[in-house]
Amino acid sequence: MGKIVIQDTADVTITDLETGKVVLNAEAQLAGIKGSISEEDLKGGIGNKKLYKIRTDKAIDLAMRSAVADIEYWAMTQGVAVEENGKGQFTANTKGIVVVDSATSTNEIVLPDGAIVGTKAQVELPDGTQETLNVIVSSTDKTKKAVELAGAKGTFKAGQELHVFYQEEVEGQRISIDSTKFAGKYRVEMKTIAYDLDTAKVKADILFDFPETIPSGEFDISLENGNVYTPEINFAVINPKGADEMGSILLKPRK
Image (cartoon, rainbow, N blue to C red; front, side, top):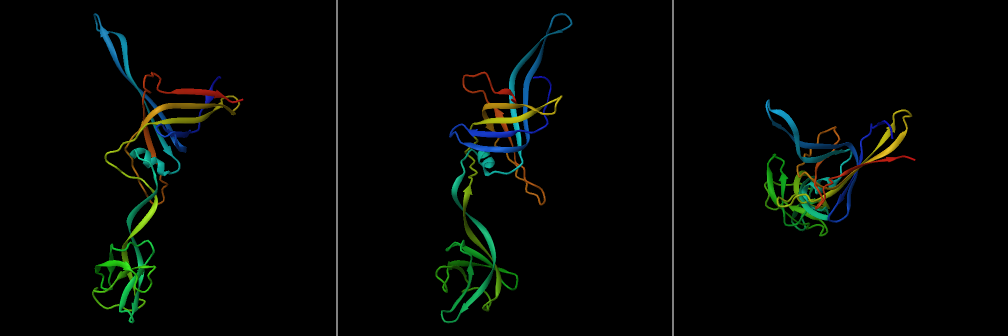
């Protein structure tokens, strides 16, 4: 094969060993493979000469930093599957318009469709104070949700704008962060390319294969204005049951 140059990061494929699903096919910014081993000198004889090097506890750890985010990263670290149609309640806010209907003696603020009937809303009054009020079905439009202003302090005019904080039901991909669940096992494959030192052309593909790994459950989500979030995840390589080989490196010549 001769001398080669490696200057690129790797593409990383991660497969769930329980389901067989390829959970990630990632464009990495960093793909790291670190091997470690415990070494101890065996000494003896006159002068306590170094007779041998005892080597045990060979371990391999993987690290990757992805150029793009994917919800599967977080699911993998938590040992759960992504719930495709998950639901949750979150605090939303809006500038609501007061509706006054003298015919029905209705004072209310109509809310966006996601508001939940039976929950409470915080309404910021003109004097800067907040009052907790009920979210109901709108009296003026039965297809809408509204904040009931009956019993609130002060008087309100039609068209008056007030800031409202309310509970909204949101549906989407959901991940449970469960204190009793931990990451399962995954196969991790990394692929990069090597260049010929003399011709500067791509000479070979280099493939790294680790059949069984366990991702670290630790994660750090730092969201900073102006900076791209690039998730990082680490894996501990495990010996498959009954096997001594932990992984392999294959150099495939380009034709």
